[in-house]
Image (cartoon, rainbow, N blue to C red; front, side):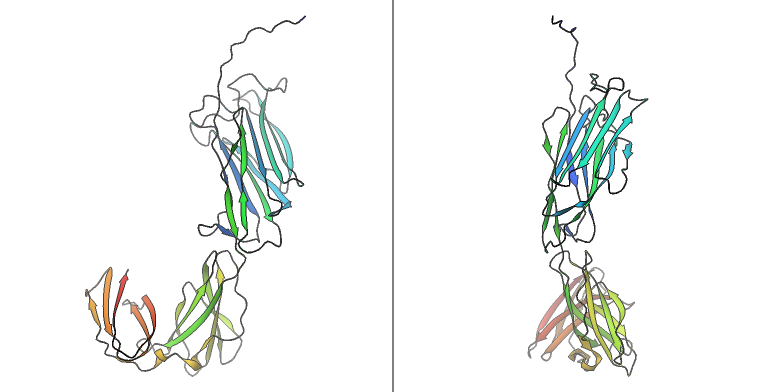
Length: 364
């Protein structure tokens, strides 16, 4: 005979979950990365401040793209909830652990985590179990993740690392999105975290070498151009050869110009090699791009009277320069402070054989 159970007063309570996935911090708004290191993702979940009960169960599912990720390189990282955390051993693709929450909580937190190397599914399950029966407890206040009153209370996360597959191409998009279920709430998708692959090295070229007659003797200026259509140029290394000897790295440059004091009666040859912001290196060079054997026209004796007018004078934050170009040729403008530091360098290119008025404005 069926005997009905005794009536029990049950409070209808609920927890609430915002969610987010965060991946590698790349370069530029496109989030460029390269393929020579593992990508680390962290999936965050929370039981918000306005929730009226602790969280009892959390299920996280993240399905990785088999065309993008190398599944055999997957490794779980730190798992955290509130002030607690565990760190699985490196290269672990599956683990299960029961954690006593005493003395604050009489229950056990069981964490089951697994990465399926066939389907690419990352699965992590947090669930509260009653210590005596190892069943789901009826106590609505016996959960493991309290409402987020004082962080990190109410916060949890799962971290993992995985490499990209070999053979991906430049500008490949890398997308990842997880799904989080908190207690009996409907599953919620996280944001889509996006990166883009930068595999193309930058390009650069030294274009001119100028002899600077108004500075110390044997002072030269090397100028050039460098570009990268993805993560951007990070720095250039200037290589020099003296009297046809072996090239050596002479200087690291953050910009496309550098002043050099060279030894007299020596022949210098230069090129530079550029590195982009994710570490791609320009192809090696063997042919000089500029040389003291072929100094630019800017090294010739130039006019000393350009009708230069400066306003205001003295100047602090703003400067307006007006000058007259008396003959055709390449015009380069330098503005140095009293210590010799270059505040402005601008190559205006070749100007025709007519008088021109040029307004140069510089804000410090």
